[in-house]
Image (cartoon, rainbow, N blue to C red; front, top):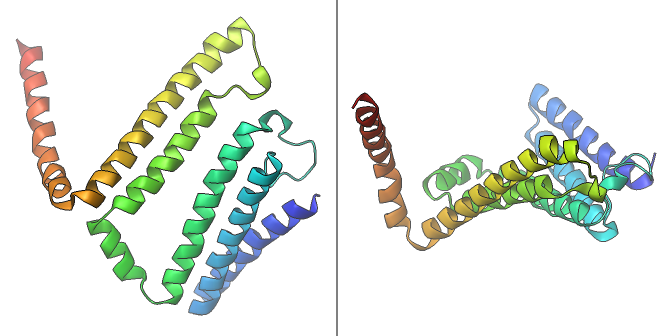
Length: 199
């Protein structure tokens, strides 16, 4: 097994064990340390993917060779984002601000929308890429085209999420009015569609 992969996986495994032990033995610090270790393992894997342009967490040198280059960098950036969020969550837990932070993000979800949008865009772009240029008519029609279309939908959804997050950040009152009126708009739209079908 590769040394980097061993360190990354070991950090996450030890973190999971620490979380379980912390919860079982009612040791808050142990739970928080476990969360930090998991975040650190994910963060290290993301950094390795970005620096080497090859997938992190791979146990052998020739694993995931088809995803070397841009796919590895995108996956690394996503892992970097997730790892940072997990470490931030551990810090919030250690500071005793978990419930207040969750309550604040529920009321003002701009950071969550933006981060989620970035992750969804990353997934969508990965789905649109064709690792190592695999070709063939059957592959293109049955796999690549549907996967690319789904990836395009995810990219559009991610951009919409980022746009909503930016809007909520700059104009929270307008965003709140839009969200509160959204169920009524959807209900009216559904009723209009039902009437059109009946007619």
